[in-house]
Amino acid sequence: MSQTAVSRLDQQMLIGGSWVDADERIDVIHPYDGERVGSVPMATEGQATEAVDAAAAAFDASTLSAYERYELLSTAAREVEERADEIARILTSEQGKPLPDARGEVDRAVQTLDLSAEQAKRMFGEYVPMDAQRGFAKDHCFTQREPLGVVAAITPFNFPLNLMVHKVGPALAAGNSVVGKPASNTPLTAVALFECLEAAADAIDASVPDGLINLVTGSGSTVGDVFLEHDAVEAISFTGSTPVGKYLAANSGMTEVTLELGGNDPTIVWSDTDIEQAAAQVVGGACSNAGQVCNSVERVLVPEDIEDQVVAALVDAAESLTVGDPFEAGTEVSSMVDDDQFETVVDLFESTVDAGATVECGGRYGGDLGPRTFEPTVLSGVTPEMPAAREETFGPLVPVITVEDFDDAIREANNTNYGLEAGLFTQDIDRAKRAADEIDAGGVNINTVSGFRADHMPYGGFKDSGVGKEGIKYAVEHFSRAKLVGFHQG
Ligand code: NAD
Image (cartoon, rainbow, N blue to C red):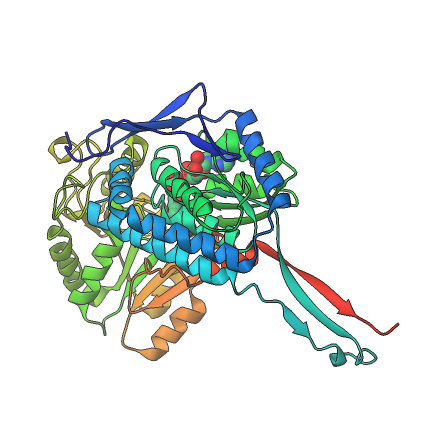
C-alpha cells in the first residue's frame, strides 16, 4: 500500500455559496493500490438544478468589473500556489500520475488562472468602418463583448485540475457564473480548486455574489441532462470522450457547446531527423500519464528504410522509463486511472498482437507491476486496420506503422475519424509545410510530438475530436457574445 496517498478526504459540493452533502456518496480510490482516498456527494437532479439556479441568480446580481474579475482570478492563482504541494498529492492520490507530473499540472493550473486573470482586462470589441458601404459614411458602429450567463464546465479524469481551470478561468474572466462538474473518479482536485476560488472571492474587496462559482459532483448523465435542459445554461464546455460529446451536441439545442474530445494522433518520424532525439520525445509523448493524454502519440509513422533504427531507439527510450508507485521518487509511468481504462488497454494490446503485431519491448501488465499498471510497450509491424492503430488506446502503447513515402505518411496520418493534433520530425521545410497544409487536425506540430500544448495557444480538434478552441483568449471568445452598437444620423 502506498504510504503517501491522501486518505479520508470526504468532501462536499459547493452550491449557492454553501458546501453541501447528498444522501449517496461516490468513493474515490488510489489507482496504484486501490485504497480509498476519500469521497464526494452524488448530486441529485434537484441539487444540480439548484446549482444552476444559484448561478443564474448570481450572474444577475454580479457587478464585478474587469479589474475585479482579474483580482478574483489572480488571487485564486495565489491560493492554488500556496496549496501546491497538498493539491499535487491529492491529484496523484486520485488520478495516479507520478507526483512530479502532478506538481507540473498544478504549476500549469496556476499559470492558466493568471492568464485568465489577464484576459479579463482584454474583453475588446471592434470598431466597424461603416463607410465601407455606400450611404453609411456618417454612421458609427462598434461591437462590445458581453458575458453569456451560466457556463457549465464538464471535465475528464486525466488532467482534472488544469482542464477545469481551462473552463472556469476564462468563463469567470468573461463575467459569467459557473457550475463545474468533474469526472467521478477524480473529483477531489476540483474540490480543492473551488475552495481556492471561494477563498479568493472572500479575500478581494469586491463583493462576489454567492453562487457565482458552483461545483456539483456525481453522475455525468444526471448532471449533464440538467445542463442540457435548464434554460439558464447558456454554454456547456465539455472535455471528454467522443460519444459523450456527440450526445451533448445532439441534445444542446440553442445552447453554445465547446467540445474537446478524443484523438488518435499521429507523429511522423522522417528520415532526415535526429532519430534518437525524436524517439525519446515520441516515447515521452506516448507514455506520459500512462498514455492517458488526449493528444498523446497514438501512432508512429515511419518510412520503411529507417524502421529498424526508429524501433531500436524507441525500445531504448521505453526501457529507460521507470514504472512503479506514483509517489516514489523516480517513477515515470504508473497506473491507469481505473479497471475499465486498464482493461481497454489490455484488450487493444492483446487483439493487436493477435492480429500479427510484434512486441518489441514491454507487454507486461498487472501482477507485480500493480493491478492497473501497463509497461511502456513498443509494437512494430502494426497495420492501419489493427485495433491499436484504429482506436484511441489511452495507454502506454507505441504502435509503429511503416509508410512507403511522404504521400503515404500524410494519407495515413489522416486515416482516422479523429483530428486532434499531429507531430512531424523533419529538417525539410517543404515537407513541414505540406504536413501543415494537408494533415486534417486542429494542430500540426513540427519537430515535436502531437502532444505539445501550451495553455495560452488555441487548442481544439477537427472531425470527431471536437468543436471550438480552448486556450484562454479563444475560450473567452466562446464564453462571451458580441453586441453591435450603432450611432446613426436621425
Ligand atoms: P468521459 O467522456 O467518460 O467523461 C468526461 C466527463 O463527462 C466526466 O465528468 C463524466 O462524468 C461526464 N459525463 C459522462 N456522461 C455524461 C453525459 N451523458 N452528459 C454529460 N456529461 C457526462 O471521458 P473520460 O474517460 O473522463 O476522459 C477520457 C476522454 O477524454 C478521452 O477520450 C480523451 O481523449 C478525452 N480528452 C480530450 C481532451 C481534449 O482536450 N481534446 C483532453 C482530455 C481528455
